[in-house]
Image (tube, rainbow, N blue to C red; front, side, top):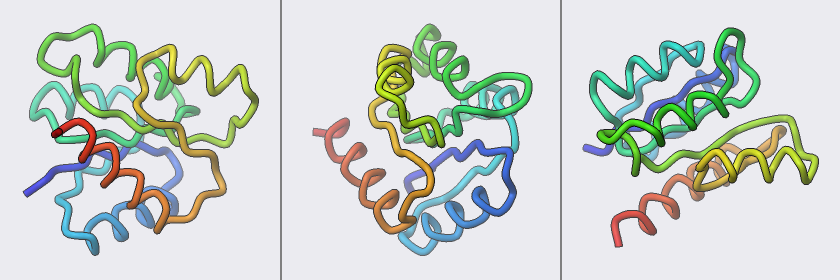
Amino acid sequence: MTAILIADDDPDIRDLIAFKLEQAGYDVIAVDNGLAALSAARETPPDLAVLDVMMPGMSGIDVCRELRGNAPTATLPIILLTARAQEGDVEVGFGAGADDYVVKPFSPRELVSRVEAVLARTRA
C-alpha cells in the first residue's frame, strides 16, 4: 500500500489530512514537527510527503532540502502545505525541491487529488 508522510504541528489539520488520505486508501504516517518528519522519512521512506512549511524547530522547507540532499530520499515526491501564499514564498518552496505547493486554507478533497496527481507523475 502507498505510504504518505504528513508533518504538521497543528493536530486538527494533521488529523484531517490523515483521515482524508486514509479514506482514499493510503497508509499514513503522521508527525508533529520537521525533525520527526526527517527521521521518519529516513527510517522508512514513504511514497510521498506532505510537509507544513511553518513548524517549530525545523521548517518544511528545511526538511525538503534535507530530503533532496540525501540519496535514499532525493526523489521522494514532496507537497508543501502552508499559509504563506506570496509569490516569493512559492518560489522558495519550489526552489527547495517541492513537487507541489498547497496554500491554506485548502480543500481536503483537492489535497487528495494533488497527492494522486503527484504520485501519478512520479510513477510514470
